[in-house]
Amino acid sequence: MGELRSMPVPDGLDGMRIDAGLSRLLGLSRTVVAGLAEAGRVQLDGRDAGKSDRLPGGAWLEIELPDPPAPAVIEGPVEVVAGLVVLHEDDEIVVVDKPVGVAAHPSPGWTGPTVTGGLAALGTRLSTSGAEERQGIVHRLDVGTTGVMVVAKSEHAYTVLKRAFKERTVDKRYHAVVQGHPDPSSGTIDAPIDRHPRHDYRFAVLQGGKPSITHYDTLEAFRSASLLDVHLETGRTHQIRVHFSALRHPCVGDLTYGADPTLAKRVALTRQWLHARTLGFEHPADGRQVEYTSPYPDDLAAALETLRDP
Image: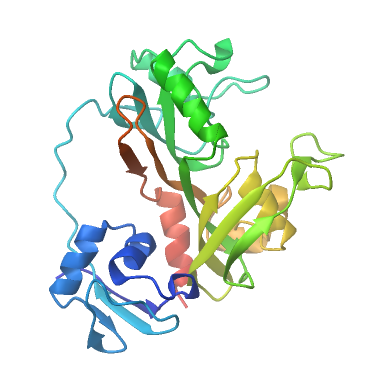
């Protein structure tokens, strides 16, 4: 018997199908959630729920999670360098799970590990397009943000992926834990972002800044914080951190953007609770839709469990 999880249905999932909503909430595939429902392991307000039933916000959800799977046999190279995990590699792209403390590429003043350096250590050939220090890099994550990144290996992949990010056809989904409870619980933040006028390393919501749009849904609410599913329509530097700080709901642990240091200490976080959960895009080789998912790293998972503990 797996773990039994009980909680109210988050408002952000109201009206969604069981298989789609619980897949988003729990990080399971829709097929797995459908199987649990068919086996009678999903209940809403004490009654069995089918995979196509709709989730009513506020209803009491009980789900018996599947037992942890045995270690999977993964085809293709999976290596770790300075915590960098290669999730997928083919002739066109390499998809990595970036750990905290690793930059996307070298930059002035940064002497720590990088994604490009880690891949070079593995002998991975990257596209030569772009500036020399960031060849193959088509998007970036902050040093303190973990999760999924795709890097171009071929010149064709670089061109296709750069265009996809520019045209906003890439599905970038993050999970973030923010202080307090955003109101409304699901919404869109449309506020321009530019470099902070006094602090070069920070950004801010400023009139005349670059258009920046963030969509969010509340997945789970705790006493002092909320777990959000965040969808970026644009991709500005520090966009999620800046937007939620402007709403007075900074990411837990994000002291740069006004988070409460007492709460950060209570959940033992030394960086922002922000994770690039999934990345979906058309594969440059044949146009098929692909999606890659990253589990929560240990520090974020531990902080989440502390927040769930009443």
